[in-house]
Image (cartoon, one colour):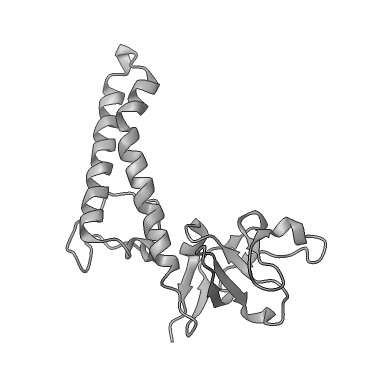
Length: 182
């Protein structure tokens, strides 16, 4: 498990108390300005949430409260997606990766065609192989990326498998691919 430090090692920004909703290996691809803006948005949302709780007696409409923080939430979602895209571009063919999650289920996995281009749901291939989950500590080999930014992996134990595991460039599951220490 990768843990977020209390203070950013490179930028010196205090991170404690900020919920990034992402793993640290994804957050490492943020610039200093992006981190500062993200934290400012999180603080604005916390402040508005506290104000909403204190005004509960006045029957403040829930949707009015949500309208007050929608811009901050949208911007932070954009930053998280941007960091995931940057992380997906950082994969290297000369490195091995392991899964750092208990399981990645079939519905979170896409498979490529036999040629290794394109992707579709693992349920399409269910009749051929029923267990297509990825488990913790499975060793994965980065194969390639296509022009759309999709990232393709081979499972180390299934080198001759006809299908590659494929993830969109902004897929949250990519955060669970961690480089194997050599």
